[in-house]
Amino acid sequence: METPLVSIITPSFNSEKFIAETIQSVQNQTYQNWEIIIVDDCSLDKTLSIVTKMALLDNRIQLFQSEKNSGTGIARNTALTKCKGRYISFLDADDLWKPQKLEKQIDFLKTNNLPFTFSFYDCIDEEGKSLNRTVEAPRNLSYRQLFFCNYVGNLTGIYDVNYFEKIAISSIRKRQDWMLWLTILKKIKTAQPLPESLAFYRIRENSISASKLDLLKHNFAVYRTFHGFNIVVSLLCMTGFLFTQLIIKPGYIKKVKL
Image (cartoon, rainbow, N blue to C red; front, side):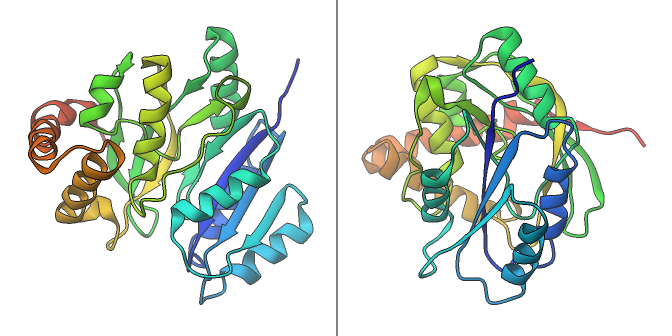
């Protein structure tokens, strides 16, 4: 059975607390034909030494350093130039994959003849403890639905380079993943998730997901800068976004029974 190479893009910055566990979650994959491209954005902690030691023991781990701190978008684009795989996937330096993540997604792509997919994911806190929440998504995600809400967890998305070629990440400092999925959905119109939780998303105290005000600010920037809308249209789009967040999306967040 063919096992095409999967390239995993991981930007890092001051990630010493999480990076080893993140890499280990990749090493624990049942699908083993992968490379992880880590681009460090001038960390000031022990991130570099941790990754360097792990890379010496596993040549599938590749480490590159930014010349100056430029944000995750630039780091991801740098990693993109180094990728050699047929499939591009993403994993931030504090998130985790479940062991069968790649195997199940590659099989799902092949079986359904898809160029892109994603999955559900569980939420954990900064210490790795379960928050008893699973984030799901529409089973047939349309561009219109994605336009008003990013249903695709960055740590779950994977696309076929043979179909799309490599897709550059937006230079906007935040919400690059949403803009990437919008670019993909604009071409293929709809996307199907693998309807199973395959990853753990870590919610940190200083993250955008933890700050509703920052989330609104950065989403507004997507409508203004990425889509190029004027202020009035962007505000109307934000109204649709807020409606989706308050009324529609909560139905896709499931509480896990203890």
